[in-house]
Image 1: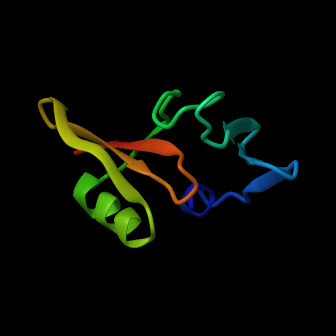
Image 2: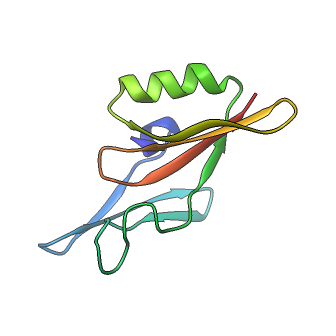
Length: 98
């Protein structure tokens, strides 16, 4: 999901029990560990945020694409709101925008 939105190919490392996925964008690797109660509890890790031009439009597009609501949208400062979504693999990520 996230790779398509950033125009990047998602790489997968499958070890038989879980999948680690990552994106390489201009030499920066963004890694996504699978959720697990012991190593990476749902919602317990750092949440990456992507800036968007229209939070409501992007949020709805991602919800329609298979993501689910996690929290927000919340007004964090005048003219700026954030929300968090969960992708189909359990990764929490955020949108930041007007």
